[in-house]
Image: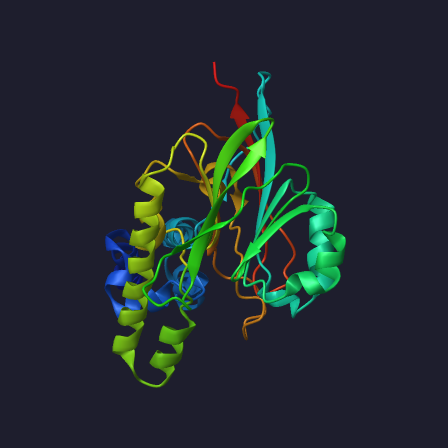
Length: 327
């Protein structure tokens, strides 16, 4: 019986693993599973571990391996030691991406994190007039550009005018903006991104409209493909692409950008799970990482952190980057 319990749990874990590998957006179940707490796949341990300890304690190692399967690949655990700043000339840049939801939740917490982490560059999404309150007052002497739902703020370096680039045929849908950050005379191309929210598809599942979840995921994937087209014309060496992708690390929408040679900064230098969303859901804690900072080939990622969980529906992501000077 103990062997059968472990076999059943193994087969159960193969389901999300295979779906993630082939692309969660390809099925309604995979698309929905991206936004569920992955620790749920460890629930069988409540039965399997006690029974194994009682009947066949020698098989507890198998139970531990299955728990690690959930805790590391399925839940997205990363652990990297901090990287020291190279002792060569170059540009050091601290970037923060933050879906601020208009500052409706807790603008004081947003200001607190900006003051705590002191980013050189902030990329906001869902700004909805956030500059009209205390966040705008704090940033009053920064270089600021804004367009549609995006705000870009630089503490020191000038910003070129934002260029809106639609990732959807519907103008009111989410899009991205690009610009140049002028650092020590060098223009660095930066994209601020916000892809389609999954809430439409998740709400549809609650109403029994399962097919809508697949349609919603495919629409977000189409946006990601258009973003991929924009990025493919950029210089991959010093490119920075950050924002709310509404996509976990397994998602095809994110992997589409990584295919260009970009790297997810948390996957390179993060520690822990780096979850950024879930605090204002019934779970009251972040359970997924859907906000990302992607960097080009020449950037060295020194460190990545996640900010507070009370300022917005999303936690900010902060990455310390270093670009060696060109020879």
